[in-house]
Image 1 (cartoon, rainbow, N blue to C red):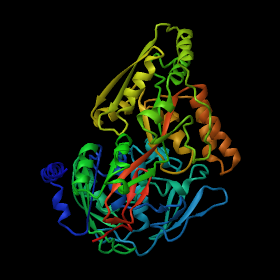
Image 2: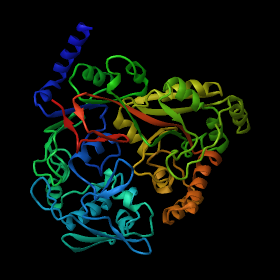
Image 3: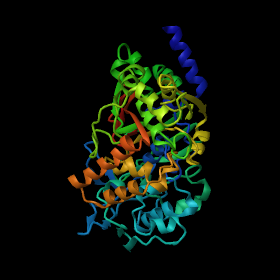
Length: 515
């Protein structure tokens, strides 16, 4: 054991992690952050980028540990008009960016305008495209954002194209962090790389793409200086991160569920923390790529997959079986029985004109936490005469292929931005979004139902709409095959207290280092 620890400590020195430990109040995290090319939340969808972003910048509202919302940069919750379309907002007057400039309404307008400006190439604009004028900007029909009106330095309104019940949740999402107009404009293309200024508890110090993000405490934070002096985020493969944690070089690591069993007993059992991701792992079926353009073939794939075996055997129970696209804790969830039936899958292929079976091609990021799932599917699909070719590629290649709509059966990995069914449906399967996630689903009926659900107030009628959407996508057209609802595990050092885990991300606002 001593030889092992010595080896691990040597590895820590080689990786250069130990200098962070010399600072008494430094916090270090290690995990697979290979998508961390920058930390501009308008330019990426990965949790690694968002994780860095939320420590430096902040949204208008904040999601609380109990799932409720509270003002963050706003002085109070928005006042909503009777028709549900106009949100009247008042900013706090004691908030300053890290460069000393005061937060004002112009920064809010600038941020929302930047989201929809085609020059930004924002990959998350869909999240708030119900803001009036947003789609016109994206389409090049307007250069100003009609839905945001500034009254004065601290008061503004946001008008929506149509009522959207969970809009306040949108204002709390990490993709909606407020940027300073002056600093962001001055940084230009280096924003999120060489410069990143926010209002949050930590200040950007340095960044090396795909490697390290270094932050320091905001001495003038309006909610009080954080107790942690420095934060280091390291991009490490999961195996190396776990070794570094055991060596004492890291305070927090996230881990692949397949590693969990080895830590549930023994020296680090009390350091193991589980976080419900409120998410879905599913297999999307690209309807634009034969033979998946045939609904019977897609149905056959659904019948060929054994979700229970994935959870119980591969994940060793660290997850729950999913037969609905919407997670159990979100309105619109449907608890349907499993489709698993290999013989029916073969019969459906024969009906579709493929009595000898079919071949499908999967691409997956080699560093993804779910990179092993396609291999499990590969074995399961064989029993139904479906050959699955699995290609592991680097993250940039995978994202590029998926965005082009050219991955035949990509894995969908989604951790909810907010607890609303729209976030699990419109995001991936609305006609304007589906290519980005390689489903290429372009269906007027689905779009109509989604538009109706988005405009409805909360209640049973809205829930029923999302159940219809889920039924159409999962059990009628078989555009996607839900696999499981994931959980994630962290190893947390005994010396760290007060970390708030929110799905796939963590917050250090109230965290401290115990001496």
